Image (cartoon, rainbow, N blue to C red; front, side, top):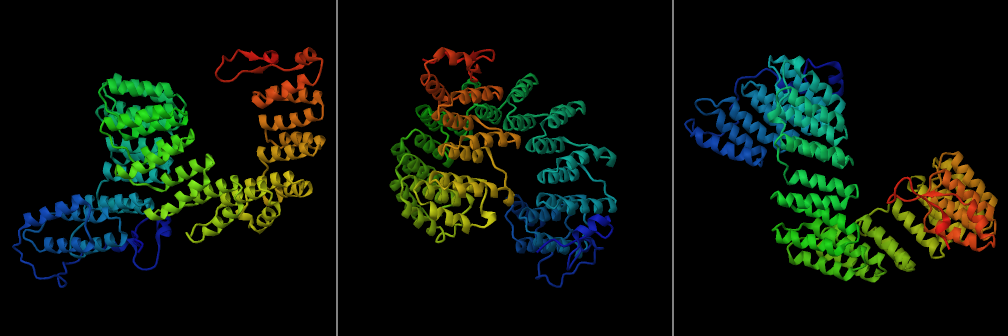
Length: 620
């Protein structure tokens, strides 16, 4: 049941937005009537108030109270002498609000008003906070209107709830404006308000403004409130958005202001460095935190294990894993999954399987990712039978395969040329109520094409609705058509893209150019290169390699040199394939040195100085 309530004197815009059948929001704020006790069980008025309040406090703190329990406590309270303070009833209302059941809160609030209790600012703040936390900020603003009409002055708690609600909806612009207007309403932001806005700004990437608000706290003599949590929030925001240098500056600033970083601070910095591929510096920060006597937590270890695994340093990753255990930090499912993935990446699937079994022994349950990671590892290492056995074992742990599971397995089956099994698995998706997505269809079409089943791929392609086809689907189909010399159909599909509202990508053009080169239609291929640039699609090194190789096979060396210069003009660095093409170019002509003088000079990779250049003089 939706909380269909409306303040009678709310603005017209708010009223229009929240009208509905049944009760209006204003019904919650009707004038209190005399207490109605006809529905109550007979209770002794002399019942111990202290005992009831103790029960109330316990239930409220636990956040685990049913509507019936709340109403029973309410009935006991209103029959006591002296009548309990509104603060006791607010405590009960707050406990009901924690359950986030709109109908319960509505019923309880109406019962409160019907028994002659006047809502105070605390009561209305509970309602307002409830609405904001459940993504109904507009209704929260209606409660704000009621606060003003009741003669109350909204406090920092009121505005903090509204700021938080707006930030939760990613409406940080309105949240900031409301924050700035608080003074107009006679209310100054407190530390919590500042922290709430800073958190919202960091979460949405408005980091410069977050820093400005952070500095404003000092100007407003709230320096004591600029605490570790505030710094951690901003540092984490910087790290997640790749601004690691700015994060490190704040890290040094907090030390200057005598605020000691904790495990959260260090973990954010380490994570940010790993995201920026600065693993050695991340490990240096890890050592620094140990030297400072700050113990890393599971998240810290997980970040480092993941980064090290991606570098292929599985033994080092295993070392971090064992260190975590020795530090009495219990590895979680993410820890195990990350290390399992690391083993799979370096082809050590037996070790991955052993760790997979160790999880259960150590009391850590598998999840979908545990299975998907190991299944993918088997498929990548050409052990599709083991992958299928693992897939069948999922049922024993009552873990339902996901679309990722099916897509991974189908890709592995097609790679192993087990087309019949891939088809059976596709049909089996219905048993598990898993709907194929565009990735599934692309894998299926690509797999059929690569296994010589192009007619079936064409049939499936044309049975898909437009909404189930994307540019990748067309790319797979075009590639399969070229590989089976169905040039005309490939061109038809390429020309059809614009009619279906799709824009060719660099993969589409490169696939077309490759197919045309294979058919020795070099002029068309070269024209397609010009067309893609004209349409704003920049060719990459693969595009040039494909076309250069085509010209090289036809002994058109001058075209190869021309394309090398185009690469140079577009600041594209040659890869191993490009260099191989150049070697073949030079070996095809006796005028080796003459061609060498014609070749352009390319910048070196990131690892070298910017002023260094590489010529083909290093070639034999």
